[in-house]
Image 1 (tube, one colour):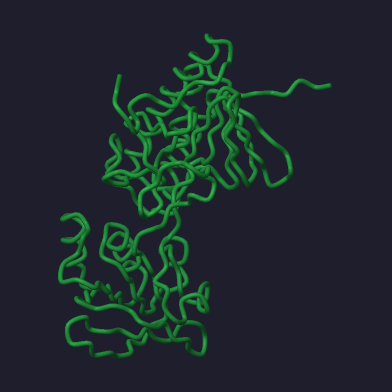
Image 2 (cartoon, one colour; image 1 turned 135 degrees about the vertical axis):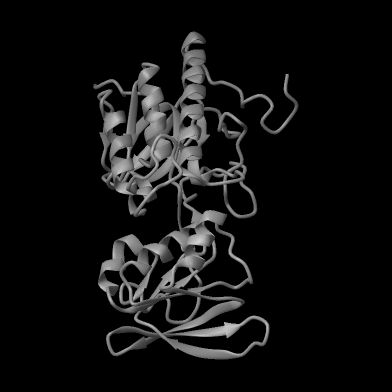
Length: 328
């Protein structure tokens, strides 16, 4: 009978956090594998330009992702290209079940599954997805060259995508429910100075209507007067945040009201050997550099955890001290 392989560490998710964790884990000589169902890089691959990652004044999201992946793979990192269907914590080791029916086992697990775009939940949104409704300007902007589009949102992502689309589209309407944007000041100034972008303040979208060839109009409501009107458009790009991809988070793991996982500063959960990093973790801000920092911290913590387990003869450890109680 073949002896069951138990990794020191399995990382689920190949975004900046997962790849950074892999780099630090491999440098710590941990038996590590990274599981990613798609191309390593995460959501940053969809960013047209990244200007706030240290060391790069300007770099494309896809290029930055490639650099992350190449760095991790330079240590001969094992990458398993499969979808994870379940994560089962155990006292001796944790089990990860894959879509192809196989199982992987590890003493520690870093979960870096990030989040997905938040939907408006209005009529016509789902029906017109892929027919003019999009959650990625870099992915779909080319199809709207010379056309009119509506961008919904007011944060950094909405501002960045509006600026990108303004280089392609004939006209960009930025719809925001408040009277000021939430984006960083530098992005706000760029949006306001772009003559191809018109901001519609105190406005929300209530319906997306189909035209003869995909999206034809967006129904808008003034939040102060409650008046509604139809704005003809060829596309609707929605950037109102995202929801955590927490489907694999084991039952009993502490989460906040929005479904983000609560950890300590070492990214430890209340399940021994389970670490949550990146956009899945409850924290003040969500940036590429913070996801990378999470990956570093979790990998170092996992290395210490594995070393402790091996020194103790692979016996089950207690929950991390001080996570939800008094620090010793």
